[in-house]
Image (cartoon, rainbow, N blue to C red):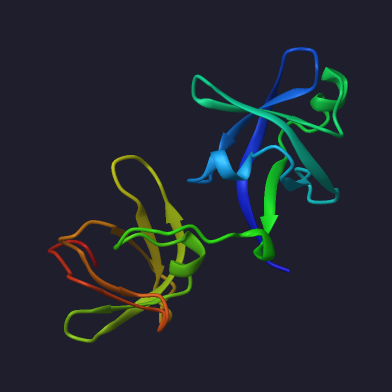
Length: 174
């Protein structure tokens, strides 16, 4: 079964079992909707625990969530450092604008230059700031290339064919 990260539990909040989450989802309002089920994965991935959202609110840069199964700060403390995930069946695809993709749709795509030269496969997506950066690993030598997801570089993305075409600017691929 494929799992998708929703957020990481970084701390507790208060004494009633609420947790602070740094979210990796673009849809926190729907992921943390009351009654929704998320699966908790411990830091070591040795524990999987289904959790049902009881309450959700936003506070500063954190999402604060209480779960039906967690009632005290001590119980919430045991969740620190773990990840909250949803299964592929729970994905509930949201309508995305043109030029927007789910990370899992882009990872694994083959990258080609505008001239048709094969560069490698996208293995990871980084979000360092202003724009995402796609990590492309060359299959011949394993070298990593960092491709900024900007209009002047990424010319075409076809997630159905798992193919990306880029414009190679000077110094981009060396």
